[in-house]
Length: 364
Image 1 (cartoon, helix red, strand yellow):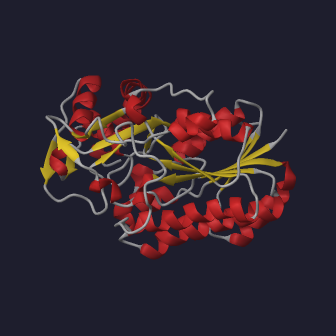
Image 2 (cartoon, one colour; image 1 turned 180 degrees about the horizontal axis):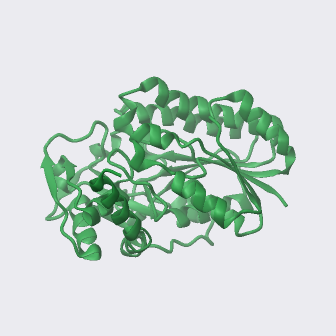
């Protein structure tokens, strides 16, 4: 039985990866110390997800509550499994560009130094393992905002004649733009993963995600846009929209679709590849459109306010072009569109969200 190591194993992408590969008979080693709770507060804790994974996969899931920045601990852990490790999915991160400004040291060490620790542990103890990294579209900084956009009734949009009509591809520059400190730390990690692939001939792949989402997302104010928006709609929690008239566009990819893309790379790896990964034209929305969809699915009205001040480095319009990935892996298909993934998030979480909200109001 081959070993799959997943960092951030109780988070959105990590937990999806754990379930996906555990169900296919692999031994899973999950690394997660619930830093998400430290970053964003108790409502962002992933402990519920860790307990769920332990219950679902008692025979082939081992949880390790360790800090990925601890290079010695990571090396010791990887040495324990050695060349049995066939795949490493590095999904652990400080994921918010808003939070990063409050503690740049923590943000950079988690995102950059933590990635270096996992890369080195892999190179020293399992150099043939496929290494997959969840990067972000924030590595492009605010360069997408230079695109010629047109204001429509509910969204900003790009002209159909523009080369990026189908979405932004990997040729967009990643420097000479404002990234936010989070974006800068992820650039460092992104380039490190590429370099280990090219310099050491390791089978590495970088996925620059748009909005990643799904039912396992512990959405919170500073991270997890669609999950948090839906949760606020369900629980009557006030929500604030920042800038761009609420017409900023995001593409949303379901965590299962992303992890199935990981599997295609695992089955046929390359060295040092970079792929944009998002909902594409198949699954995208503006903030205003997302609010309407959440209200429709939940049967409730969202209480929300608007401020003209947009978040630093925020994109006005971002849709991913996955043509490069599809060319390399034509067997991959995207299953979840915006409505189906939002409906699934509602169906699987509504009771838990309402129960949590009741406990909060009761002061329990």
